[in-house]
Length: 358
Ligand code: DAS
Image (cartoon, rainbow, N blue to C red):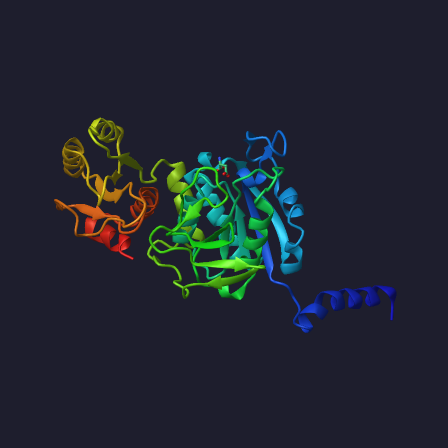
């Protein structure tokens, strides 16, 4: 046998032997976007730090245990503090993940992300992605070189979850501080503590122990499939954004004495929808009430949400009005994402309310 034939045979054996023995590890791609997990502080005990400094290779090197759990590849999508996250990056991130799964590049994806808007990115991806493959977001509350940095263990847990068969068909999830959260349910509840997230209405989906997920509830799957995008539809979202045809939805906070000044300014600016982060069970000041009427007269959709962390807004609100949409259990920031995407496909209150109902 010639040397060339021998080398080809040897290479084939190297690649096929693990599969033949069924020992192939799951393939996980880590898509890095920035945040504190990639942040560096002036010293291990310094309080101030710069987020989004390290790249995905450095993050992977800080969690050496991950390569025992999965065959890992790293991809740097952007490197930003997540308070600067945008719809454009969301669409790009969705397209990259769609392509990774559609082309069978990997079995699961981990997105490393800032914690400030992690819940929003997770929810956007949960709405547009239609794959059963696990997508898990994670981040950190302390920078990478801080004493007690939480990034490495969060990344390890996220890779273990994304590599685990029990994580399939559960929609997009997040892992922080050993807890597993559902994209639609979790929110940031502490500005600096490593235990910074919660699901106020339903509690976490489960926990991770020693790299193994323990779920408290069965797979809920994707709760809303009316907005799932295939590759072409993701490109159409990107085109709409480029052509400034993407629905414009803003959030108005109500509080004691709130005026309608911001609503009227938004109406002058050309708005497609407004989410009211109301007080209590989706209530608002007298002035905002008149502002809402002006929205309806101009065909601007109005969603009644609440600034209160738990309980949401359901149909048994005070002073219901024709044309209202209630947010259900969605926070104002997630109600805004749902309304924006829903307005790319639907244009009646009835259709939109159906999508808000889980
Ligand atoms: N500014 C925060 C962010 O990028 C830092 C963090 O917690 O990740 O979301």
